[in-house]
Image (cartoon, rainbow, N blue to C red; front, top):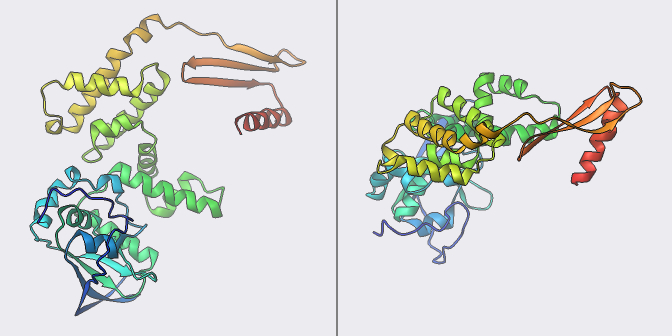
Length: 324
C-alpha cells in the first residue's frame, strides 16, 4: 500500500482504465428520510484510488470544499482510513450517469483516495432529495465541525442561486429562511471576503465568533492601508520565529498577525494627513456637487451632493459603462 502517493484529483478526474467495477454486495438497509422518502442502501466497496476515481464523485450539496481535503487537514482520520479501519460508511446515491455521488463522507473518500486504501459507501439506488441530502450533510457537522469558510461558501452559493429567481432577496430574509441567526450568517458570508492571508495563517477551524469578528476588522484595516497581503504574511512568519505554527492557538495566531500588521502600518500612521476631497463637478446651486475623496492607495469615495434621482442614475450608468 502506497500511503504517500499523490492524489491527482479524485473530485472529478477520471483516470481509471482497468474497467474494474465496484462490488455491490447484496446487504441492504432501508431508511426513511425527513421528507418521508424511503431509500434502500446497498453497500459498495472500492479497493483503492483507481476504483474511487473511476466510479465516485462528491455531490455538489456536500459542504466540504476540495481545498480542505488535503493530507494535512485530514490528519485526524487519515491513519485510520489508510490502515483500512473505516468505522462509518459514507452515504451516496447512484446517478443517472452510473457514477456514485457522495453526500456524506467526502473526508473519508479523500483519505482513501490519497492513501490508495479501501472505501465503503452505502449507496441509494435513487437520487436523494436535496433537502434530505442537506440533512444528511449536516449530520457531519456534529462529528467534524464545518468552518466559517465552509459555511460561507455554502450559503453564498445558495443565496446567489436563490437571487436568480428572487433578485430582491435580502441577506436578512435569507438567514430567516435558513433558520440561521442573522449575525452568524453575516460572519459566514464575511468569511469568504477575507484576504487569503487570513486563512493561510489562521487555518479554517477552531475560530471563535470573537476572533472571527476581529479578523473582519483587521481585513478592513488591511484594505484601507498600503500594506500588501504578502508583506503581512512574511512579517507574520518572521514574528512566529522558531515556534511551530500548528502549536499556536487561534488567539495566539491572530495576535501575531495583528501585531505584524501594526508593525508594517506604523509608517502610514505617522505620516498620514487629512486629504481634502477633489471637486469633480459643480451644479447650478452651491449644494450641487460631485466630489472625489482618495482614502488610500486602494480606496476612494465619490460623494454626490444635492443631486436628484435622475442625475444620480446618470452618474451610476456612466460608472457602469466605464467599467464594462
